[in-house]
Length: 194
Image (tube, rainbow, N blue to C red):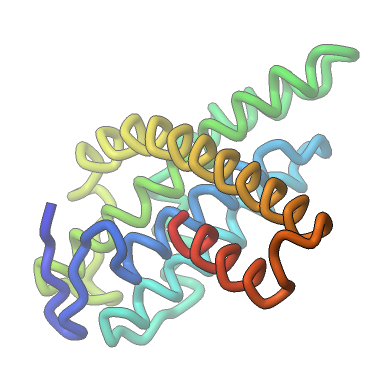
């Protein structure tokens, strides 16, 4: 998919700043979904989504307004019922926090990914922060949310593999096979790829 960002000439390709912003925030939101304290996870995910929207607006030369961003997040991920359901499950003694955390994490990562793509789509069409209509993007949001859950899973796998490589490199450094400088150089390359 090659979406051309009109104001900054950035492309929505594998290594574009826009894709990186969306993927990074989707991963962060997934992690925040595991916070075991009900409502604290929702607050953390919302803060992550707001930061993503701020960064995306900047990429498109838009002036972001927090009040509009909060309205977008609420309107798009209006599945507050699903969020509250995942929260309620967390309250069940024992297994509740695990099951609720997994549900909330998947919902958080997928919806963050979807919100990012919907906003990019709006900006790509020449839209602005002022004229965004979440209802016009409802169908795309739902499609992207499902896609986002899969993408986040893949990103987590990539991240795990990268961290394993970094640990192996660190062992080589500790054994004297690599210098600190070589370790840092290779580590930076590995981490930049995820």
